[in-house]
Each structure stands twice: as structure tokens, then as C-alpha cells.
Image 1 (tube, rainbow, N blue to C red):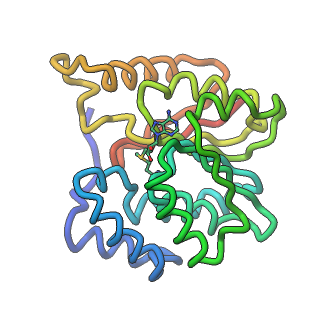
Image 2: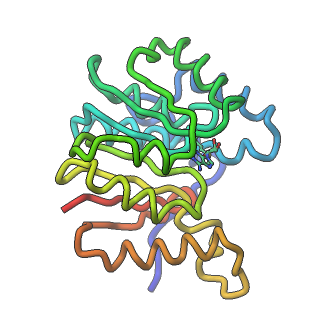
Length: 219
Ligand SMILES: C[S@@+](CC[C@H](N)C(=O)[O-])C[C@H]1O[C@@H](n2cnc3c(N)ncnc32)[C@H](O)[C@@H]1O
């Protein structure tokens, strides 16, 4: 099979990001700069194009309640929150007080902190404690890779029918097709991808942009 996707690095990437209706504002740009100071781990942050996609999907699906698993310094949460209506709500799950304290500062700066609630605990514990009600319209999974399969199971009964679950890093820098890569994260993502592709409860497609993003709709 062949692809029609272009190489989108450099100037073309800047062109793409600047031609959305909401390119990154000052708050997002400054958050990206501050996150760079974290060092190598700054690579965990989603990029501007993916952020624009999150905002767009949140709006396009009329999302009122969203949940994010893996907040880090807050870039993706800001992008989801800005796509919500004023009375919308985003629940953020993470374990790091250090990183999410940065996120909280930027939620304030963006005037979005009223829409966002943070729960600091392992995501599986927070999810298990949530009521078994179909309450979320959109979920973004971007935390520890070995937890992906259980996060999906815990989320499904809490998602509305036709609710959308977005899952990041499903290509794991290409490692998913490299038989030499057998570390726990790669194995977990491979198993997760296989499971999603065959799951009759889900309507899923894998987008080959970013580090791979799977878009799932609960049937
Ligand atoms: C890839 S980063 C998230 C990046 C973020 N979505 C962004 O765009 O900036 C992964 C995050 O998952 C968090 N994390 C790791 N293990 C977790 C767990 N068991 N429960 C909840 N969060 C976890 C880490 O603390 C980290 O902030």
C-alpha cells in the first residue's frame, strides 16, 4: 500500500498551523516554551496541529463533558477546554503534581480554569471511582502506554453512545512494526491496536499523523 501524505516538516508545517481558524494563541505558545525547559520529556507534549484538531473535534461534536488521561503541562487540556461551551467541563487525570501545577497556571491565564477539574491519582483509580453513567462525550488517552487497554475498558461504560475516544502515540515512533522492539510499552500498544481493530463495540480509524492517533467512536 502507498500513501499520498506529504512530508509536512518545516515551512509547510508552519503554513498548515497558521491556516486554521485558531492558530496557537500567546498562552499556548508560552506554555510550549515553558515546557521545553523540562528537557527531553517536553516531547510528550502534543504539537500545535494536533492541538488544533482536538479543539476542532471538541467543537464539531458539540462536546459538553470531556475527560483527559495524561495532562502533563496542560497543552492538550487547553486545546480541549477551549473547544467546550462555557458551561462545558473537562476532567483531567494525572499523577504528577509538578507538571500539572504548570498546567493549572496556564488554565488560569487562558481564563479556562472554571471548566477544568484535575484529579491527581493513578488514572485507573480515578476512573474506577467515577459513576457507571454514560457521561462523557469525548475522551483523550495520552498517559502510560501499559494502561491503555484498561483505560479503554474503564472509559467505555462511561462514554455516551457515539462518544469519541482519541488515543495518542499508537504508532510509538514506528516501533509497532519493528519485531526487534519488545519492551513493555511497545508490546502494550501493539496489543491495544490489535484489540481496537477487532472490537465490535467500536468504530475506529487510525490516523497516521503525529505519533499516530486512533479515533474511536462507541457504537
Ligand atoms: C504524554 S504525557 C501527556 C501529554 C499531554 N497530553 C500534553 O499534550 O501535554 C503523559 C502524562 O501521563 C501521566 N501519567 C503517567 N502515568 C499515569 C497514570 N498511571 N495515571 C495518570 N496519569 C499518568 C504523566 O504524569 C504525564 O503527565
